[in-house]
Length: 120
Image (cartoon, rainbow, N blue to C red; front, side, top):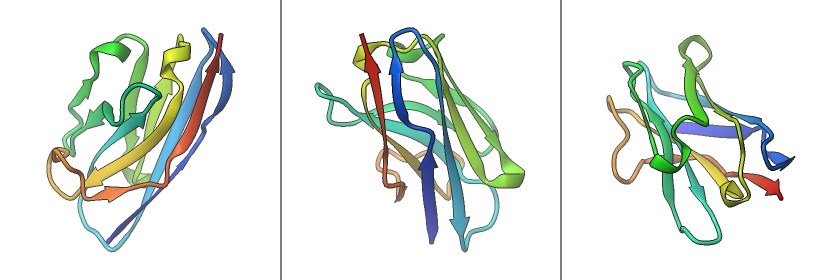
């Protein structure tokens, strides 16, 4: 089993930045595929960014150039640096993980979510 705990959400003005963190713990071996999803007022679930166990990354078109996903394998932690935030980025951000090289279409493990609110 894998437990995911997110942190770093909050309220920020448009154009500002936030960094989300997600720490994985539990009984697993190797490096997890991890990523960030979000639920907004208009989208029920959207993959924002993912990172494979090998370190390859992918992003939603809406965040390319503004968000960066990274990981610290020694800490089993993944980060999402969000710059140039827009009001439409407002939502609940969820960390997800799989014990596979890349995230599955329906990841097995989920965090509890962290709220990000961007004011205009």
